Image 1 (cartoon, rainbow, N blue to C red):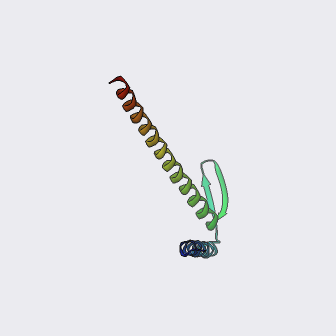
Image 2: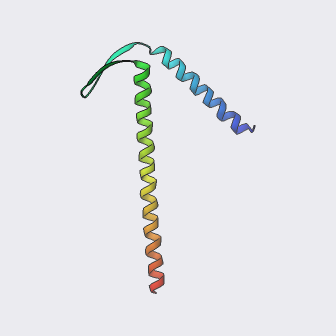
Length: 87
């Protein structure tokens, strides 16, 4: 195993340990109302759900950003190729 791989595993282990600590500190049940749904969840589940939702939103925004940039680069290179062929 390389040093970089060991560091990545160590950071992953530390993050997992931090997640367990935060979860055990937030076991209190809270009432949640989202639009037409009423329910009871632990704070830990609520935190995990909102974190996951934020992560997925950021990932989809990044993917959309890269797709738009890829399409724009494709149009620019196609336009340049057409101009070179005509000239």
